[in-house]
Image (cartoon, rainbow, N blue to C red; front, side, top):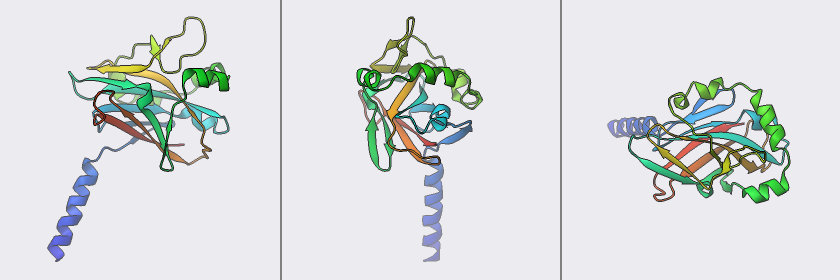
Length: 192
C-alpha cells in the first residue's frame, strides 16, 4: 500500500511538471510556452486601470513548432474569469461604447516592456499591419479577423475585454484556439 501511494504521488508530480505552466515575467507580464501556441500577455496597463469599463492588454502569439501553420480567429480568443468565458467585443461595438483607446495607448507607451522583451517574444517577428483592435487613427493597422502564426513570424495585437468587475489580485486565464483544429490551443494565466 505504501509503494502504491508513493507511485501515485510520483506520477502526480511528473504530470504537474509536464503540464504547461505560466511564467510571470515581471511588470505584470506573463508567458506560457508549454502548448502549440506560444503566448505572452502584457497586462501592465489593465492593472493600473481596473476601474475602466474596458481593459486593454497586449497579446503576443507564436507557433511553437517550425513548419506548423496556425490561424487564430479573433472569435477564438476568450478570457475565462470565475469559470465564465468572456469573448472580446466586436470592434464596432467597442468603438461605440468606449472612447479611451488613444489615451490607453499613450499611457501604455510610457510603461516598461522589459518583462515581455525577456521572453520568447525577442526572437520572433511581429508584422504591424494588422491588429484585432487598431486605434481609430490615420495610418493605423487594419482590423484583423484572424492571426497567422508560422515559423518565427508571430502576431502582436491589442486586446480589449469588458471589465467583469476585476479587483487587484484577481486572476483569469486567456485562451486561444486554432481556427481549423480546436485541439491546437494556448493559454496563459494572468494575475492583476
